[in-house]
Length: 176
Image (cartoon, rainbow, N blue to C red):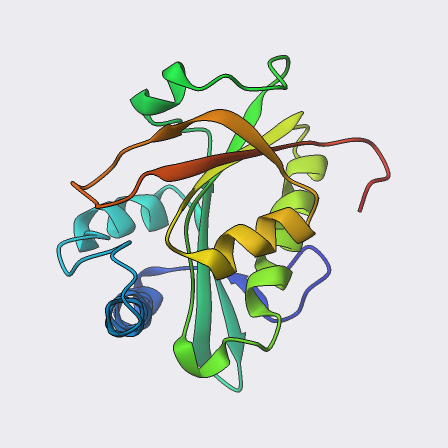
């Protein structure tokens, strides 16, 4: 889909694998002292709704789901307090990007982000926004490497110990 044969639009049959990835990622992050997610988030009901709205995508190899990403226009209320550099145009938001611990380091997250950027361009989005837990250095480095800009301000979610950085990227024609 959109130039990457490993990325598919998720359907209901993918839900158990997606939820397994979230559980495995939570296990892995907690073992590393990263309190980004807990076992009550991401919520299965939210993922089901997003799948029904055709907003969830999976990264699959050899019939195994190894990553997932949700793309939509839903900006958290907390985003209103952020000082965004780019303010004009319609916004695509990345939610719940997750890569199975056994596939980390294989550029799955990078490919999912590249997919999001191509999706944004092909669907006439001017900007991409997302948030990344400050304690998750790998995810923050990924967005920095992909030339996302760190916005001024942070968001607090889920009673976490640390806030979430807010990142944005302006989509230019021919950028991908």
